[in-house]
Amino acid sequence: MRRILAGMFVLALGISPAWAQDPPRAFVGAKIIPIAGPEIERGTLIVQGDKIVAVGGIEAISLPDGAERIDATGKIIMPGLVDTHNHIGGIGGADSTAPIQPDVRVLDALNTLDSGYRRAVSGGLTTLNVMPGSGHLLSGQTIYMKMRPGKTIEERAIRDPEGRMLGGIKMANGTNSMRDKPFPATRGKSAALVREQYIKAQNYRAKMTRAAGDLEKTPARDLAMEGLIEALEGKRIVHHHTHRHDDILTVLRLADEFGFRVVLHHVSDGWKVADQIAAAGVPCSIILVDSPGGKLEAADLVMKTGAVLEQAGVKVAFHTDDWITDSRVFFRSAALGVRAGMSREGALKALTIHGAEMLDLQGRVGSLEPGKDADFIILNGDPLSVYTHVLETWVEGKKVFDRSDPKDYLFAVGGYGAGFDQVPYFCCFDQAEEQ
Image 1: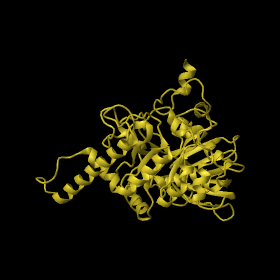
Image 2: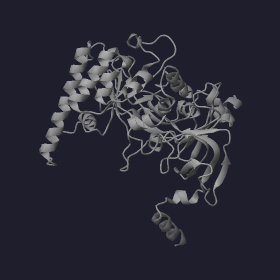
Image 3: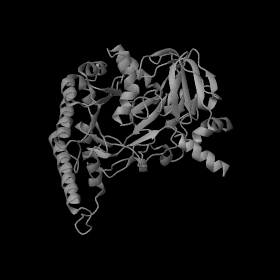
Image 4: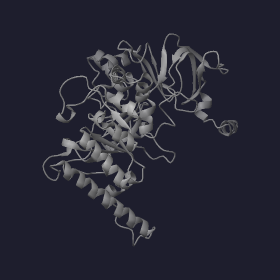
């Protein structure tokens, strides 16, 4: 009875029982980059359970009774990084039977024990949009994941208040999806096929509305149409792979015609049509590749894309497209962006809050603010310095990476065993010693 009454008291205060059992942790003395406001030279971050309780200057915040005090002097604390475009765990989505397959869910293809997730946290990534590949006009539904420990997709999935796993829709255009039948062979046919399917979805939705729950009038369930309707109604953001300037404008044209919410991904030629992107109010998730090679469509990719888009008023995020950019060096994207003309503030937002906004998760992640998830990283230097390392990564108040732990260090630097899948979460260090 005492336990029940105590639990009721905790709930009455608006605090979860798990929080009540967890003493607050206070990280004191670090330089804090909250993203939501100016950098704090000597600050305090207080977390309890899975939430941030307070953040501010060291003199402005009193430590709560019973708090565990952690000296973070000389270190930097900032929000966990948000990757809007990642393929860790496998990219198994649509197959060769059709160019548009909105019923396919990448969550059914992911290996959640993939060692890549350990690489991700070693690079400070805490929230991922994991997507199928770009070889289709529409290759399936993406999933938004937290890098919390877990063996199953259900344990790592980000959910809405109703418990639904959150994600978007992955679309692409350009040469990736142009091949032999039933795929299109031209850019014009690609756009025509997309329009055709969205019109079918509009008609299907109209029939469902007219049926008004009458089973005799309700059309047979169509999972593909349901996926497209979620895009039409804004329940799933369309994450659209596109490179060339004309392909970018085609996406904007289709989004305007059908009213779906879209994030443009890659946009190698985005600097050529920055004003048009800005006028459409569409955000861009970009990648900066600093080595030669790649596809012909990306021939005009330049380091100044982020700066040009930022100056035009476009919201910009970076992504890894891991393995294209290794998650362990995600900070390098922001550094290259600044070197080519982006503002420091804009580049750091492009790693955090802007990505969160592109996933509709800005109320939970992307900045250090009271009430948000306790997702943060501790660095040993400035985030834009090539010499800086992620020392610790925390997800929802739990430490998921510690560079001082040899088991974690292996994933941060590579070596024998770093590519083994996790059993169940760490695997490789002990196996390497035994072998």
